[in-house]
Image 1: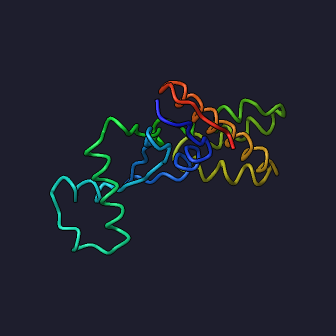
Image 2: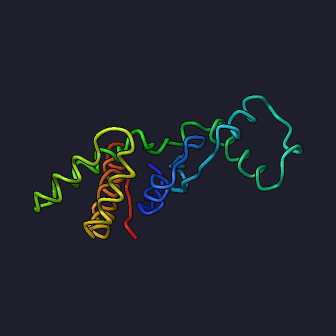
Length: 156
């Protein structure tokens, strides 16, 4: 099915998601593309391209391609598929120093969990450890997604 996909492109799209956009893999070209809801709505409403700036016209054309050839595109995992909170919990469980893991576990309970977690990893000087752990977890999610969709991937 198509060409091998670049795992780094998939990881980048997963990491830099926004609520108002969606990323897709073109299985024919291996290209990862991102379009906004507005781009898709413009196509669905048959909006006039001339009303939009040139840069947005390109995005709308991409959205048109996605809608016209859905069989060639697979939606990438969203932030709801790759749970940052769950990754934080698993990271905390991986910490051998019980004092640190207990403090971080308490920090992520309730409102403001992400901010308190960030403050905690800075206080305990384990930011680098967290970022490596998070990077590996997102890479694993990207690989799992490729395997689930029977996609050949390259990690370069």
